[in-house]
Length: 336
Image (cartoon, rainbow, N blue to C red):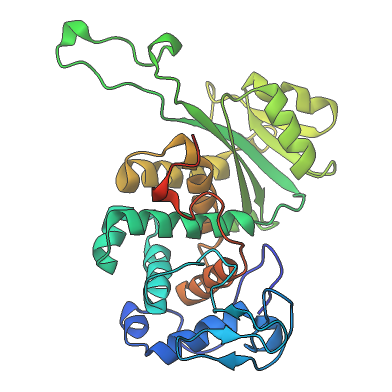
């Protein structure tokens, strides 16, 4: 196992799935020990005081909190993490991660609230905290080799009028509600093309434009890479610094003459759109980047077993700081 940013847990033995029955049959002690193991992995589950950094067998209180032997301050297994100030049992947090992991095309928060028997508000905040942890730990090192880049537009369209005569062309910019955004994805292919892509990064912008594309590519793609793109003018500037292969979709989807396509990027957008239409039905602009990154994580880990993914997400959550946006979210919208 590894605790480095962007890497994941691979289980070498035992069950390859983490069933909900297994989680919800956990005793409080078992769930507590599981959280200790992933919160303080470097010390083999021995608590580390988040206030002064002392590593020791601190006093454990009846409330399952610890008191530091040095600074005498109290802390818990979730203090200073994305799950700080929790009110649910630890089993419910494990259950939420396992439930979301099992959803191949995402998981709606209404369904999560029913599965956990909690309010929608609780499930909403919990799910977004998990997405925030995934964003905090995504691998942002430069990509190399064969790279595909593309963009897709989400949202912005108004509802059609009831009567046919009152309807307008919803594709025109003047008839949109200003909430349309583009998700730009870059995908690094495996050397063996039959395996598809191995890493995905997503970015949100207002439009698919040359300025944003140039900034993304220069930051996240190596100069030695070969970039595959479509005929959009947003990618014209890349020819100055990179080797770029273009495919004209008005003529074909795969250009066999120069051996280029962006099918892997299109494949990712298919998964993202299925989550949009089939699970969530709507992505708020404030959270669109988190949804896109969640689907990129699912795409990159599609060949990893669910148990490893579940524990990887738990590790990322317990090693993410308190959320500045979702902590106390329903006490006041901090995004305004």
